[in-house]
Image 1 (cartoon, one colour):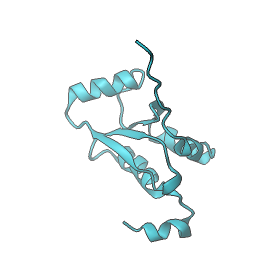
Image 2 (cartoon, helix red, strand yellow):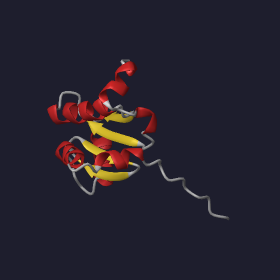
Image 3 (cartoon, helix red, strand yellow):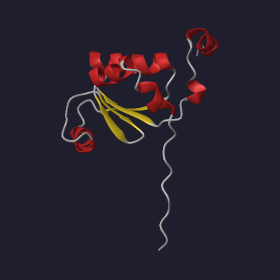
Length: 111
C-alpha cells in the first residue's frame, strides 16, 4: 500500500521470508495490537479469524500447547505465544531474525 515508505522507515519486507500465522478475534485489542506490529514491520501473515468457531479454537489450542487465549502467533510453525510475547521478542531484538528465516523445507522420505 505505502511501500515507498519502507526504506524511509528502515523496513525490509522483501527480506521477510518466514511463514507467519496468527489466530485472532475480530474485536480483540491484543489481536489488533499484534497485527499492527507485524504490519509495521512489513510482514505478510496468514490470519485465522476464529470468532465463535469452537473447532478452530480447539485446533489453535492444540497447536499452542493448550493456550486458548487470542492472539496465538506462529512463525515457521514455531509457537511464539500471544501479543505480549511478540512485543517482548521485538524489544529484545529477537523478532526480526525469526522473520528473516525462510520456512524450512520438508524433505520427502523415500517410500
